[in-house]
Image (cartoon, rainbow, N blue to C red; front, side, top):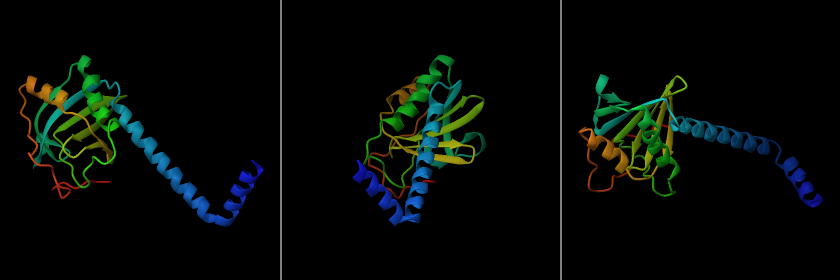
Length: 181
């Protein structure tokens, strides 16, 4: 134990500022991850929610726009359906497995706007690219995502709202929409 403690003290003295810099960088990374997780938790038990069917191939303007993507239709959810729909987006980010995301690819076909604690939060989900993007005012949060769009597809199908169809081939990382970090 003394040897381990002595080694740690010696390493700290020899590395000097580098240790403080590394420590500072690690602290910043931890804070960033905590902020991302807190933002993702806004999808847990929101008060209201509206889900959007999006077409990532078309730009939207004004009322037909959801963060630059054309809105094909929307559903204002009943209070009993709000949490279930919001958790589809949260589960997509939490069920991600490394190696699935396509860098530079973001083709969201589903969006959700939730309110919680008097604030509004938006999320756009691209199952095709394994990517979830969250919007909080001027801040943008990016998450790797996975899962199955079945629940959201069924929701729009049952409401007779059109949906865009993903291409038959896997998208390439050179998508027309680039990721914002």
